[in-house]
Amino acid sequence: MKNFIQAYIFTLVPTTMLSIISFSLYYYFNQFSFSKSMSIGTLQGFVIALVLNILPALVLWYKTNHNTQPKIKENNQKNNIDLQYSLYILLDYERAFELVINAIGKQSVGKILNSDKHKGILFVKTKYQTIKFKINKLTRHTAEIRLQTQQDTNILQDILFYIKDKEKAYLQY
Image (tube, rainbow, N blue to C red; front, side, top):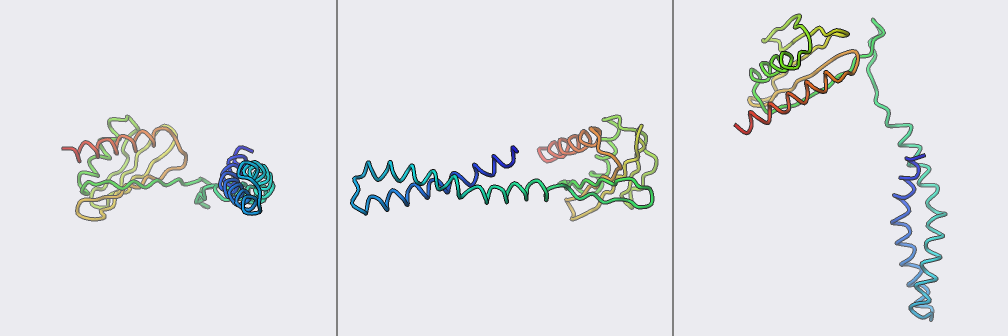
């Protein structure tokens, strides 16, 4: 219902203003006084805008409630849901790899099971899940960090925030 009200108000304001201006000008040019044309135009414009905005508001409400759910890739082999996060940082590949290892250690996420610096892959075992980190070299000074896991936890948010903070520190240095 909240989305419907927001959509209704979003479409109501411009339509109301346009209706008020157009009806006021219409009555003013048809031999009404300025004050009378403004009052009649305001009343009529507001009422017509209320009625005309129900359909667009319903359409916007339907689209926002039924089309914005994220599409999640399902892994058919294990019946687990894989969540993926991508993070682009302005650091070279080696520093990005070291930064991910540092973030895992500082945030006390878990134990690093496997790491390969040449392939850019890290596997980290936490209490409840295994997180896969994949670091890709995009350009000489940019890298992409991908996180893949089965469930969304606050640990992932903490790691991502830590990496972005350290990236800012490197850039300011």
